[in-house]
Image (cartoon, rainbow, N blue to C red; front, side):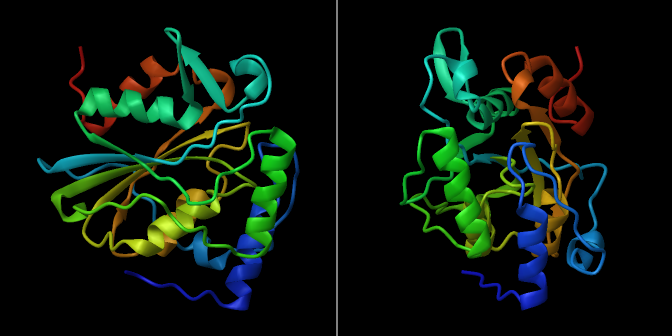
Length: 232
């Protein structure tokens, strides 16, 4: 199990860069506060590998509202209900043959939008590391790890920090993807690269929550560009 102990300066950077959620709040981070992530390296391409693929994802779909649009973080496709990030993970898994793994927490997040963003903000401000309820027991079997998450407060959700601190990704390729309300990855890519210095982090795919339902062609094109799916 890996442990990371953040200095006050780095903690301030994470809080500063994270105080926005779903494109609803705007903040400015100083250059010095973001130094740890500004120097992180993000690869443009993925190394060829015949190893197994694991598609991991964290999703917490809102349950208030009467349909997928009202919920904002969920989508209905062919009559089935998915969390936004879960649906993108499903597309990736089916196209690549990769195994799926849901990152779940012991704590259950609120289903209403206001309560969810408040809970996420408190976790950021306290640099929380939510306890995970699911664990990968055979990580050594995989060479390529897709990691999906929603953009919360201009960063990946705090459960993803728990996730990256639990495992050793040295020598593996990490391919991030995210769903968002207009902010893309924000600082998340560089944060991951900063945490996983001995892994290869590839520039991933951000998907707007407004385009999740129709995202399949775009996701498949991205996978083709990475060499996971043969062009038709």
